[in-house]
Length: 207
Image (cartoon, rainbow, N blue to C red; front, side, top):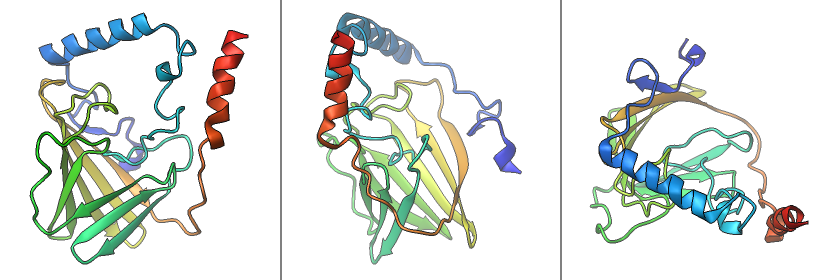
């Protein structure tokens, strides 16, 4: 069973990320140096992860990865578009299916600009135009994601994605995982309401 794999990565076949490109190595070193200059994680609100600041979570993607909790998604199909809603933070993506071009290159977004098409029974979504503030494992703002959603039975979607970013890795890489149907509502997720937790984290560190 594919669920027994020890890695989500299916290409390369060894299940590991490809090596960083020269540009990727340079950018990783620059990020590490910038993080060192900013100080510890509790020295400033900006040093904490985006999720801890209730800005954006990794559930929505692309790619749509699992977290420790609140991994439920709602998928709604309508004429000419499909919508993905994540329980975590209630982020959503609306993907046009009408063949329109992506946004201009100077328009950059947190979750990029996605465009979809059908290849038989598989929904293919290509996303570009990222703002670079929410990278996947150090990806650049010019990364291109290709997601594939294939319903393999009544309760299961095979979710595949390919990451193409020569500015970060020496070759594209792909991963795969199942999305299982569930029952019941999507509950409200308010992160830490009013962001009091963030204030308390910083105040506690200073105390």
